Amino acid sequence: MRCLVPILFSVVAASVTKRAAINRNNYPELLWPTDRPIPYKFSSDFSDEDRPGVKDVLNDIESNSCLIFKDVTNESDTSSTELAIVFQNNTNLDCHLQGIGKPSSVLSLAEQKCRTISVYYKLILRALGLFGPQRRSDRDDYISVYEDDIEPDAVRWYEKMSDLVSSTYEVPYDFDSLLHFTPDLNQKTEGIPTMLAKDPLHQPGMGINFGLPSHSDYLLLNRLYRCFDRCATSLVKCQNGGFLNPNECNECICPRGFAGRSCNELDYSCGGYETSTATWRRLSVDWSLIGGERLCFWFLMLENIVPEDPLCPQTGTWLEVRLGNFVVGGYKFFCNAHIPNHTLISEGNLTVIMLAKYADDPFEFELLFRNVEATSENTGSTFRVSLALMLYFLLLL
Image (cartoon, rainbow, N blue to C red; front, side, top):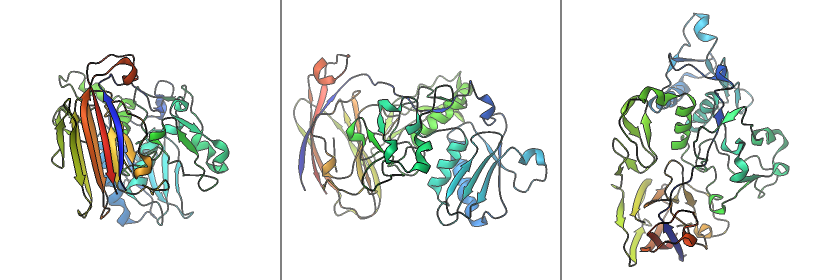
């Protein structure tokens, strides 16, 4: 199937939207310590073969924050084990978290369903104080939640949290967050979504991710625990949405597609870099004969997208466009039915296109792009800029 879609990218200032976690000013007692390791332990019925996966997740969280974890399973000192994150078996065949933050969080994980890296991340982040974006106090600016279409037992997971209980910490709302629900989760009737994105281009990719914390998830965690305070004297200025690494204040933790100490380098070893001009240029990609999984980025300087059948499946292969706010994920397209019939506007002078390919899924896309003069009308912003980028996409799946 072939589709040709016009897309206009303008150079405008990025706006900041926000996500939520525990309000530390009102509930400081719920935060785990940052001046010493956070204890955790396994119950005797939590299998030995599953424990390394939990430890890998905790090690990754350590690498991306100022938090440190310590296994106290075999320690007899009750003072070190009473206040701990506990991992235990669940015979009810579900995944459950009891308690958020101190003094104790118990993660009950059924062997048949819950022993996956993604589940570990989700429940641990919640135990540390993060909430799903669909519960933010300002979530109505980004999604519509239909409680009548949600399973009654799950409605509580969609209830908005007040600013008294939660805070955004100036972190953008991210449909790519690991904690964001998909619109078909907990639906009362198959085919009737529980949530709709205010921006319909976010609907296909809502809650679809790599099963790992997003860049904004880690940014939120670091701000919640004031991890950046230890880097107060750092002279490094992170670019493209990166943030200082609290474990090494002379370098930044970068969003997908960016690299370098300050995230000023573009990772196009797989993908490419193209400069826009006033005349149309063509970018063609054909992965129909390439096997295996891949993740590649294309950078269009100065500067959508993709995916066939209106009932197209959400698979591990998608094309994503980030228009300038690189802290959060962008628009995901799984088939041609998702291609917009209107122009998109970039937020800066760089647009990032990511193609994630799963296994042997065939995939092709093609685009034309060029500069155009931007006006207040076509930027959709109060900011005036001198140049924009217009693209046409051709997708073949």
